[in-house]
Image (spheres, rainbow, N blue to C red):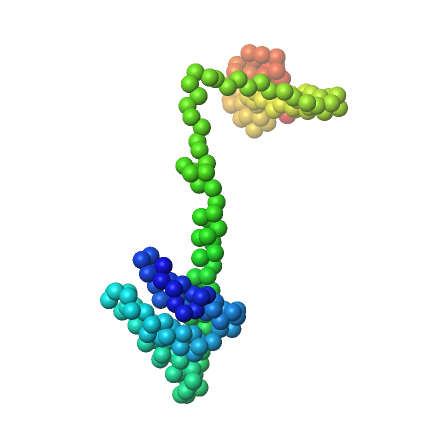
Length: 218
């Protein structure tokens, strides 16, 4: 663990986190809300950190130097803004940097909370094999007399209101009767009973014969 002159700030170089993590630690050292941090002061702190750090490898140092260069440019634009449009863009970039620092702080907080929870295989152990032991479950119902009668009545009512399927019988319509009478007119040579005009298919049963009579007499 490498410590700087500021006791509030420390960086683990072996488990390198990156320049943004350093910025977050430096921002916390200002003891203000992340939305109120001074970008210019943060840039100065980061440059001092780079200057005092002697044991960074080339790959890590290149990322830190790139961040330092970008912060120096951002600081110059904040102190000596150009056109109003350019000033607006610089302020927007600074706000985005603060937003990234807030996101990183939230990620750190959630990571710490997750690591503090009990983990399977360490604090929590799974149960071993049951062997030949079997679990026996028996249901136990608790209800009063009113609930029992209410349930029973609902079952009975469901049975009483079951759907009824009524078979559809053939119908000898008035139109069928008129057509039958017209067909018989050409064949009549003597008096006939109207019931004799009912087709044979409507004489097989009492109910069917009724519809045959109704169709003829209509």
